[in-house]
Amino acid sequence: MFLNLKDIILLLHPILACTFVFPVIGITTFLALQTRQRRLKDTTSIPATVGHLHVKLGKLLAAGVVGITLVALAYSVVFGFQGFLMQAENNALQPLSVVLVVLMFVVTIAATVFLYRAQSKIWRGVFALLSGMGVTILAFQPGVFRRDDEWWISHFYFGLASVMLMIFSVAIVHDIYQDRSLRWRRIHMGLNALVLVLFLLQGITGTRDLLEIPLSWQAPVVYQCNFDPRSPQFKTCP
Image (cartoon, rainbow, N blue to C red; front, top):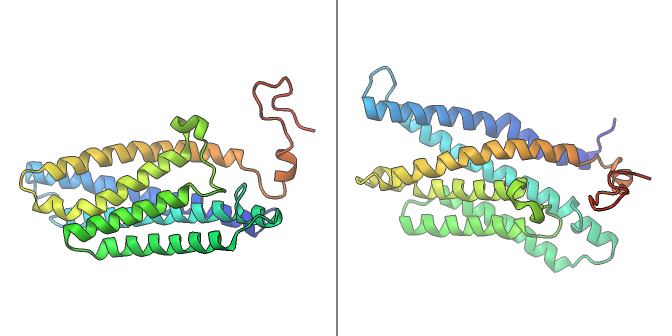
């Protein structure tokens, strides 16, 4: 057995993405196209419930995206480079930081739950803001690998943008059906077209990152290798 508990926890994020999030993306996109076709052509070949199903699956998708993002962030904050475990090994761990991060996870989850329950526009805006801020604050904690020098091909930044757009989509879903000018509907369509592109990029960059992350028993050897492209010993290992 070459996987320990740390490796299994690491794989939770891609497992949930492959088995839940991406299938729901496909179903939600299909229902969105069916909803639009029924609205434009008023065809009876498409059931009237398709719009309701699209909204229901869209909310489920947004919850799933926020959920697997928090799973990835929790792993990184604890097990990542300069995360809690490494800080503890170096006697640099501050208990107050641990408490604050745990509280931030709780607040973010609670804000997301209340966002789904809120009816008024003001409270939906408040809880969406709290949820988005919570994810962002957690995302920039020590231990989270961001690839800041290559942000344009970063799984982290694509994922963070996707989460923000999904939270915003949930916040405006009630306004879409109350706005007779169709402004919110057009905003919803445009933003979710962008989200689809981001999800595609997430699949590409996530697969790449899985190849770069060694298993725990491999890490001590792999991290001794030279990864500096300017060095003549680039891609060589002891």
